[in-house]
Length: 159
Image (cartoon, rainbow, N blue to C red; front, side, top):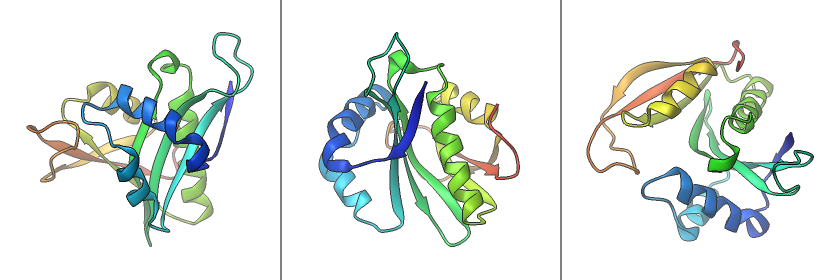
């Protein structure tokens, strides 16, 4: 169990950075986060544990950074603690982004996923995302290889 709340960067940054290190081969540092989150259209939410006896209450177990564009929401980064994966944390974070998109009448949520991140691809697919096209951009976590745009129509739900 747990809840998704807006991140207070000064309070949550050390947890976000720890999760970032577990989630990406080339994790961002605090300065990168400060630059990204200084943009007023970029937001960060965290998943905080509350009553699961296996996990410490108050523990930040996941985060999502996303940007609200004029016609869509773009997920910049998503990470979940390794010990908390497959417990619904990522789904709650995706559903949070879906709520924002629906509230702001955004028809699409987009993200970019490395061709090597098959676990992430499968998770996003289970949340209603579909592959839309191959991207020319290289992913931050892999120096070689391609990435794919995955898009979600905000009418469908995460399973």
